[in-house]
Image 1 (cartoon, one colour):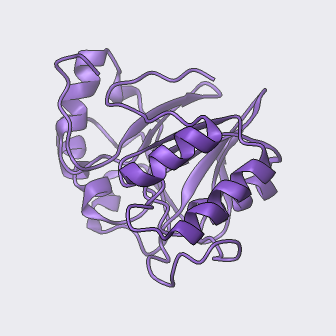
Image 2 (cartoon, rainbow, N blue to C red):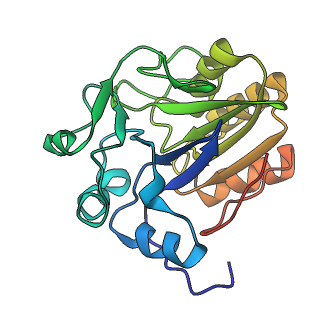
Amino acid sequence: MDTDLGAEWGFSAFVESGGKNILFDTGASGLFIENAKKLGVGLGKTDFLVISHGHWDHTGGVQDFIKRFDTKGMTLIAHPGAFGSEKKEFKGCVFSDKPVEFTPGAIFLGEVARTYEDAGSGNKDDSAAVFKTEKGGVLVTGCSHSGVLNLAKAAEKEVGHIHAIIGGFHLGDASAERLECIISGFKELDIGELRPGHCTGDTAIAEMEQGLGARRITTGEVIEI
């Protein structure tokens, strides 16, 4: 966006849902903290830190976050294989490879089966969070190493219809066949709002823009649903 915000290879989102504040991933560094300050986002009011998976471009800002804010009142949510020693800095930790509703209307999906889309066998710690809204579920993804279609189907099982998917879809090197499978799957799910970014890849974003009316997310954007 046309602002003085910084950008880097990474992903971080601040979600306000059900009266709770959820920090989803922390990007590659403490840059997200500076951006939040410029946007007037009060990171010190975070109730939950949700980690999608353990890669550096999603957890790299955790140390800066711990140094800058009192995290003793916050709860960490992650897959058991995703996080390291920083967990001692939080009030509580929920490590789960099964779906868990960590606050009313917000569900961490745990370990996701590779059933509907072949995303490979790696990154078993990759997960996402889905939030219940009046329009349907809003799925927030980090990198979708589990397969964005697999994540969407898993989220649908938890909350019913998925209205929106926001985040990284990890399709930079996806084949035409895989993209076709995902786009067909999204059409079947009747996703109302697709907001790909981060590791999705320009080709995949273009295909989704043309075929599904998707819109690329940008740094500092506020999305209200």
